[in-house]
Figure (cartoon, rainbow, N blue to C red):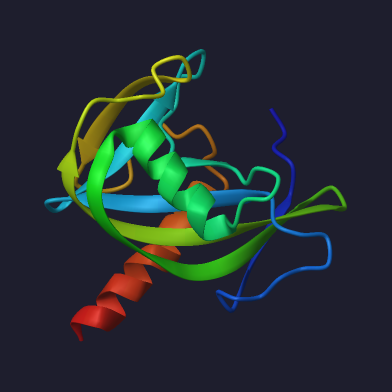
Length: 148
């Protein structure tokens, strides 16, 4: 199987492309373990994420998606970067967030999310194996900078 050639570029967190932003994606950590979700009908794991709805800011979308997809109730969230994914001449933009989750309650998005799980590192079976490791790496570099 031939995977499409992808180019991922990072920009300042407040960069706003003319075409607008499509996604908010959140790398979320819960007491030292990373939260990943598996959507219904998909085999792989994903970081919590979703489309930015009409008249919604990327920050509000990130907070909403994190709560809906993981049940996170108490957390701190920070925007790390705007990013673009270019594939076959098509470009889409998103915002990358990092969240430290302190409390998880009931999962509200049970129609979309099959299960959540906690990992010490990036899981082996990812839904988007060509994109998620690059975004996850950006988050790890941010955390490393904080601790040094």
